Length: 194
Image (cartoon, rainbow, N blue to C red; front, side, top):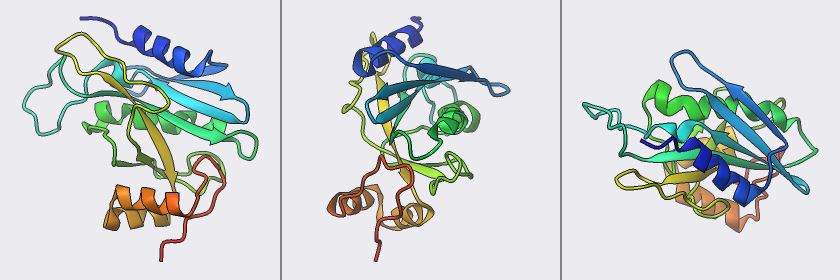
């Protein structure tokens, strides 16, 4: 079985450049999760490294397959300079460890909540998981392993998260689009939802 993490890091470097910082977090009973920071002009991108080491397993499955199953890493993009977003490292590691800790399969359209602001003063405690394939191209692995998907995270206010639960992820994304919402603004207000 191939160690996918060097391949994942190489894909991140190809797409985002050289990381200018990295931090590692290990939770009891889980593999190490790293968060890499990439700065690109006024944007800073945080990418997890370690979530894709093992495939995510459906919690209803009797046995975990060591090869087959969805694999992913998380990518968060925010504007630099208006908030202390570097404090997002631990919350991102918590989200990346959730498949191992809680047995969840992280997929596009899902909401993930850390129960506290993503960074000091952030109006967000949760994120919407978006579709992969945009910023960082999926990483194909040798069969029968599933590809590693790099899933963008879109921070949601509490009102947006509640509205999304009722109306769905697609409706919230359409609302953001029609309102011209800057999803990379780390201090943005909630989109109008009436």
